[in-house]
Image 1 (tube, one colour):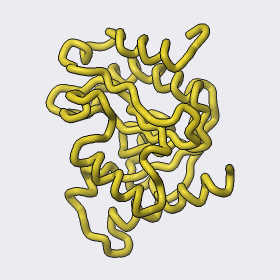
Image 2: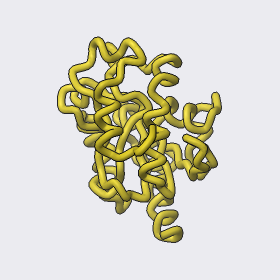
Image 3: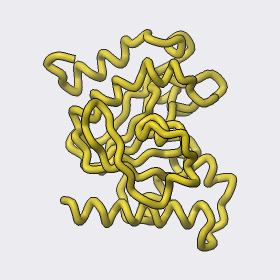
Image 4: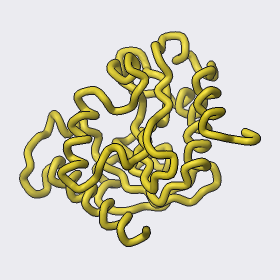
Length: 195
């Protein structure tokens, strides 16, 4: 997009009709956070509460993730938070490949404006889309990877989706919640050492 600015990008995403999801959305969920954040957190798609409010990660899963981030030393308001797909898939299903393909260039534009140090991918959908892999989150999490969006090389840290964590709440070592806290603490350390 020529002469790209945050305002122009947000307006363009709001007018998007490149896939059928626009027909059933209440609100486009563009994303939010500081426009100079060093961390971009990327989910898969808005859920019901996000579609209603127009804000990312504000439902039950999002609140749980915000609590885990705070426990690890991250403030939600310090991160830019967005999704691979900006409109809610019906019934909160995973976005389809065509929907991801139609929407991914918007995320590339966000990356181009933000120029983050690291991208945190939440769950399988964004991890696989950004890293162009078929590996699942259980294999991907626990370390930094290289990814690319819009021609920009990125450090990527995949984490479990909070909806999965809500179903697996044990904090024992090696369990998903404990592993996610480890991932988030490693993210804090990464940002500190690269700032």
